[in-house]
Image 1 (cartoon, one colour):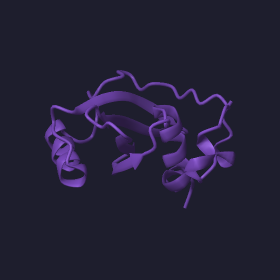
Image 2: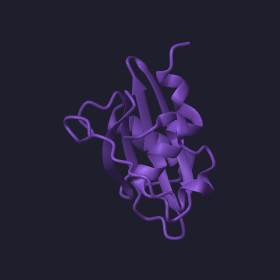
Image 3: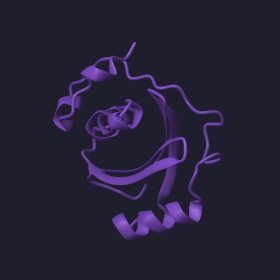
Length: 125
């Protein structure tokens, strides 16, 4: 069981992080149901990261402590991982693109982004 309050907020701590990070998939595990259109995702990828739609590859969906998540990566990136993530809670969405270290797995990326920026999304204000 993941203790969301104990997830590291320092990206480098995830390199040797060996706790299980198994996030359930959304149903369906596809771009279907994503609150943004593929045209909006592709535009954002190009504008923020120079990622062409040919290199934009869908990775997975996830439910991270009640936060719905859709994740893409730049399939053309060579020396780094470039992830584009869309988080949604109800009608509120947050789209972000990050240049990351090559060892960063999708699950570690989801945990890091949740702990670093999105945990406030799921907590009562």
